[in-house]
Length: 272
Image (tube, rainbow, N blue to C red):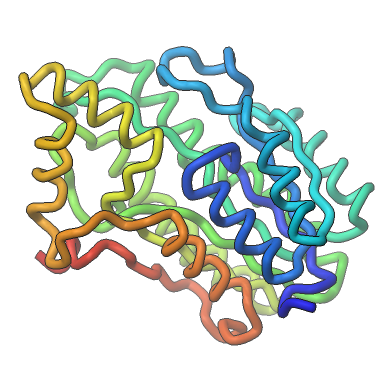
């Protein structure tokens, strides 16, 4: 039996990439895991499929000997969040861990040239969606009386400025601020709230954005990756399993007194 046996976790944006890795890490530690992501046609402007792999991830979770639940859920819409969270509570009876991982990285332009749709969609997914998911889950954690863990996936972009991605940086800076505030508000209920801040992590989302940048700049995708790595002290990309290990730590009993913190996993990017 794993350390998280008997616990129930939610991971958003879990169809692939680091969300999938986080869901499997929590399942491997014994937690039952509910996952969600958006449907294939919900956000066509992002340019890559988001929800089609949910069933496969759920099967991977069950293969680890725990229960899985999955649903298509657009975290921009409160009604879909409420339906998903209500289903998790009804089927599993509790919610102990929430990982707000869902996010998008799209568009690349200086702030004064950025269009409204790109800015507002990024804000709606990366910041407002996580806040809405937390708002739905926190009352369940409080009423359960056993505390809980909220883990917000921010970014090294929440600590630095990145030209061309001010909209993304804004949401990640704000997510760190929300993390600190909720930690102060929920500590009395035994709920810890922390952030994980990865650096360059070549997930499908990052690969898509890097290919767009490469096409505009006349570079290869590998050259764009080299530019990302040039600011890091350890010249290697972060792996999804490394961010997942950090989530597992923050969900564990070992981190019961860790709250309001931002765990940076960026190969030294933010130390530059």
